[in-house]
Image (cartoon, rainbow, N blue to C red):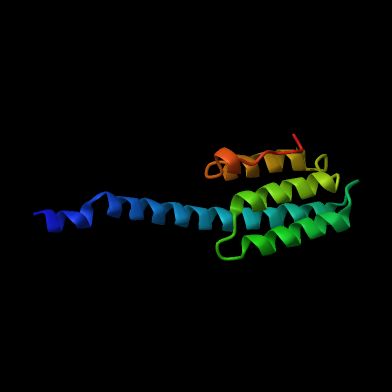
Length: 125
């Protein structure tokens, strides 16, 4: 029956895949926002040679952008990495882990969904 088969056709599969990708992007956005907030807090609490005022703004701007419905997680992650680099905080180290290392993990996670022109680069590397 052709009429009944439309419920399970390619359009339904495409919608299901789109819904899964959308949920993954929302989850990634929340994870990135939390990681950014925690990294920023650790940076600011410990103190370093980086510009703490600029780093604070990097964190607050990135978290605010990540919480916007429909936010571009790829652009947000790229902007955050660049902001930390511009604040000279790439070499900040806490308990043997540098901010560069933390950003490597964040960028790798973001690049699970940020591909092609949206691929995020770690300017701290």
